[in-house]
Image 1 (cartoon, rainbow, N blue to C red):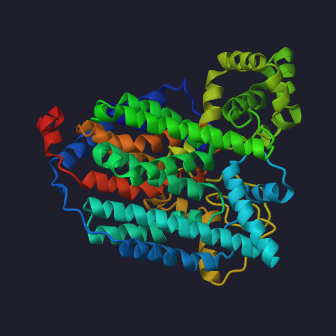
Image 2: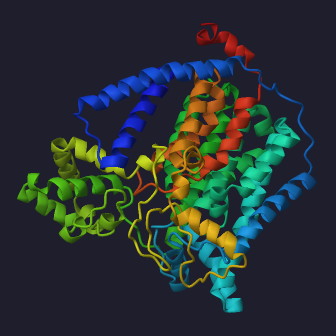
Image 3: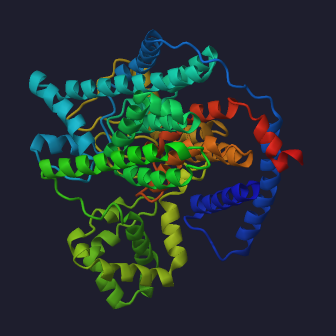
Amino acid sequence: MPILFSLVFALCMTFGRCLDRDGSVPFTHFGLWICVLLLTAGGTFLTRFVWNLLLKADVEREKKAAEVTGKTFLLTSLILFLCYLPAFLAVYPGFFVYDAQDELMQVVTRSFSTHHPLAHVLMLGGIIQLVHKVSGSYNLGIACYTLFQMMALSCIFAYGICHLRKEGMGKRKGILMTLYLGLFPTIVMFVLCSAKDGLFTGMLFLLVLMIRKLVKDPEGFFKEKKYVLLFAGSALLMMLFRHNGFYAFLVFAFLFLGLHKMMGLTGYLKKTVLVFAGILAAYLILNKGLAFALQAQDAGSREMLTVPIQQMARVYAMEGDSLSEEEKNTLFEILPEEALSHYTPKVSDPVKIAFDNEAYEEDPGKYLKLWVQIGMKHPFAYLNAWFMTSYGFWYPDTVIDVYRGNTVFTFTYGDSSYFGYEVEQPGERHSFFPALDAFYRWLSLDPTIQKIPVIRWLFSPGALFWVILFFLSYFCYSGQEKKAVPYLIALLTWLTVILGPTYLVRYVVFLWVLLPVLLWDLKSGDLRPACAENPAFDN
């Protein structure tokens, strides 16, 4: 396990450095692989050393469950809401950004598309449009939606904190977790952001808690119907709020059921299968039902083909002379030459937006053959194309600047695209605390925080990913695989986003939210049986 972890880390660090500096990985360069070998060797010894220290360290055994009342939940929810309130007033009416205008206009015009999750489109657009019809103000409508999301996430996070308190988390740790979830800037920005990522993160957070309950105490999970309902509801809404949630949950269901013996769920297999099957069936019925009822236009295959589109675009842009006229003409049938000329290494949108879904659907096999044919001749270009749109998710020192030069409603992106920050039309920013508003603008659009040694890792998607993977690998190393299972859903979600159009914090904000839960799992429980059974510990 230390070798495997260190090898993957070495590859990502070495490749990421090359991509960040040169825009490509020189796969045939001998020195590259020497660096990988040295990093793997050094990382293996260091990782094993740290993991063995963790094994030897005193850990908190399971404590007596704290008494958590409804009053505690309401108080924690209120504290979280009050933490968010100054930022809300500073950026009033909230961060109405990332496809927000498009989602609202679908409701206004009654012209729907499956490009965005319809459940979120109806929720966001419905609240804003309803308030606008009553008050005549879109700003007030956006503010009401932001307040609704603030309340929802405050309650979800408060439930999570109270849930861990019942497991034995001390009052002091509960306060620290509350302050972290209420004040850490990256989390706050997405609590106040209209994009679907905030509510999606809340549902994933709740789902992980319920999976933990199922793994640790299956009898209690099925005995208390509220846990089953929370599990089903959070999983269903997670999938309804982001399309990739469905693929992550589908794969997770098969993996989870395949591991049922290891988790001691043999006696509960039938119930578990029924729950998973019911959730997936409910999603398919609701998703298709909404599309049918709203007569939503099918978004086609464009989003699923993001990586292949970017790969062929890179070959055309950088090695176009190597393509035959027949290959070029076939490529132009689904990607116009004008669109291919807009190839941008770090984001696929400039090319993808012109993808001809109708032409592709007429003969998918023809274009699959073209993709394979080009890829056989340019395998390294294909890898570099994919890496360039994803390396920010796995290279800790990445400065997120994927939208550099892109002009939006109120500014042009420069050296940082960490967060969208603005209020898209028809909203308009009216700050009640300009200094705090300026802080969030600086954090979003200025790269300084992403360049400060050590501090930058607190805000880095790549760094958060490696911290979480480090501890999950440690669970496997120490014989505590059951502790890692609940986080498989988060890792599978992460795998779906690295197949997306670019790397942005919004796609993986759940890493920040799940971190305190993972640290609690690291600290809690009796590890001595696992230590005694682990040969590495004896060595």
